[in-house]
Amino acid sequence: MNEKSEKVLEQYNISINRMIRGRGGIIIATGQGYKLFTQCEKPDKYYERENNITQILKSAGFGNTDTYVRNNEGQLVSQDEDGRRYILKDWFDAKESDVKDMGDMCRAVSMMAYLHMALREAGSELKINPCGETEYKEYAQAELKACQNRKETALRKTYVKHTRELKKAYNYLKQKKGRQTFEQLAFKHIGDYYEEACNASERLMDERFDERLLDAAVNGEISHGSYTYHNVLIGGNDTYVVNFDRYKNECQISDLYQFIRKVMEKYNWENSVFYRLLDEYDRICPLDDNELELLMTLLSYPEKFWKIINQYINSNKSWIPDKNVDKLRKVIEQNERRREFCFEEQRWFDLRRTTRPAMTHYGLVKDPAVLEKDDPRYVLQIPQKELNVNPEIGANPR
View (cartoon, one colour):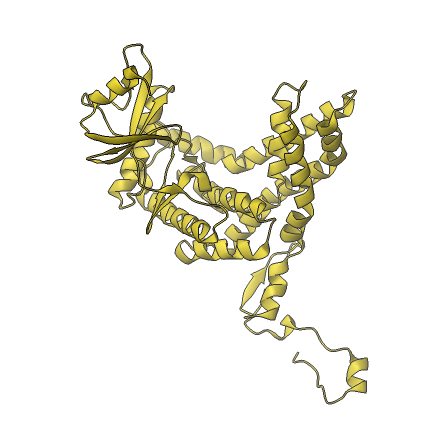
């Protein structure tokens, strides 16, 4: 921090004890608690928008967020003598959650559930659209009409767009001469990934998701938009959620999906990790069968592959870093585990071995399979030829 930027801090009513670098700026211990001081570039309205949601959450009782601090003139953005712009946020004596620590991840997904509940309770106070109420109603009606006519909810449009981008990448790689290692590897596998993307996008259009996605679109349901372990801080017994700059009108299942996907990638798509995270969320913010199926449909989309390929297409393709090749190889190596997790329905078999609860199972066929608790169909029948040889075994209940 230079002398000019330090002078900007004089515009705030704070007493500084010490300063350290972190989180892209300076973390300051003050007599009024921890603060984060960073340079900014966006117009003021973006920070006012973000501040609006954190203040509403704070009023609703969800106070573990990074709210902005206004300067002595009541502004969110301050300037130094050269016109450089800065913001100051309330911060915490906490560390970024550790993806290798399942305790941290469980705390993070639990806090997400509490956040989603708070956002729903805030309800009408939260309108993404910065216009007046009359204009917002017109916007909502237009959104409803678009959704009803073309099923174009925000979530669906996102993955239709991703799939088009994969096709564009495939066509580019197909005609590319003298492919480098990354391009050879990408072209070898992109056909399979494109097929997976098309299938997932098609399942996302299923009518059983219509009501949930329409409700989110029209009623202004809010998701954090960037709920990753980087944006969850752990300090003692407290958990904090930061960086609401990407919040948006979208079904909250998208937050849960993005968080779980990123954690699952770190744990090589281990089933037990998924169930533990899902149980933590569901304990606080229960999910119905359609929401669970929506989550699994999103997890079946090859998003990590799309992300790497799309970054390549949008970059200077003349030079590809070795780390990009390594990332692509890792995604391809993990894909069999991801497919196994998404499509072989191992939860079904785990429940057969353990508690045998009442459940409805959505597989690849249209009609769901329904089992009552301890349903005899949880176990297979012993073959008759084995019963003939060992009649004392007895047949399983039917």
